[in-house]
Image 1 (cartoon, helix red, strand yellow):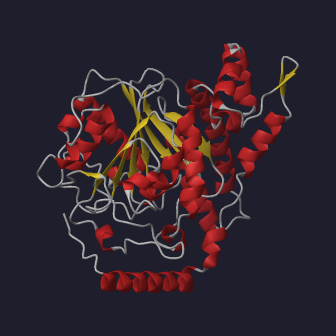
Image 2 (cartoon, helix red, strand yellow; image 1 turned 180 degrees about the horizontal axis):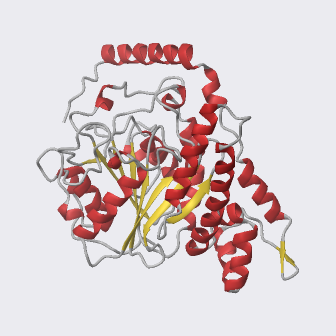
Length: 405
């Protein structure tokens, strides 16, 4: 574990370094990076259509109604009604918190089919630049991959760089649910990678799901690869502020409040995803039992106790991770606060041995993945602490699979 000099002089130099880095980013990327997010036009069109729709002569409920209200509405319908709504309002239903997970999967398959047809047409449109046609081809192939039988797409929005979430396992029967929140440069095209697969959300979630089954074969689990927010594009202005984290926190907590059942939920937040989880923490439902961050540049607080959550807070960082060199401070909205693995932060610090840099925490065979899986199934007594002692397990005993009240 790397130690940090917290002298006032060093903190001043870090502040100056942070400002210098920001000025460089502003000069090279411009403030426009803060204003590139566009409204989800296709999704909004589907929601608008839903808001004017009817079934059996009755108006459809507000799509932003409480998940429990929407859940009761869908429970009152027949399978044929579900099918009609999925086809007529594919994007709206596919992204509607409160709709049954199985219906969202079905609706998103329909939406993906529609999006694939759009990109196939764009591929051959001579009015589009060669680069645009190439992008259309890449997106079409990604949609084809997402349409592979058996994939469970919980959220999908094709607008802009795209947003998406996928489930591994059975959400309805799970006794433990894990949510993987990735960092910068996450979109539809980077959601899954062939090269270095465990650095992308799908690979992270699949590795975690497999490791959880190994850690506790008798515990039914489900893992969500959650890329349903607009992440910062590279290490620019957005990555240095909490803007994207604030927007994503609203979306993340809406999902968490709508998850089925009462199973405990564990959050696994990587890199800028840990910034998002820090911002979201105070609004997370009490069933969120654990928040574990890896490769964190900060959670926008000075202490774990300031997150405003009853969840246990865990942190890990490999000694070869470059993120240890970022200025752990916040100045005028820039930077993300204290170091989560620092002794004064108050997180339970886990071993991340063999994680191999900034993107290797979900690599099979590493301490980091084993520790994350043990947290995911509630096997707290099995985790390995960073400092070769049992400090991170202090006050914990046994394995818990019961939800909090």
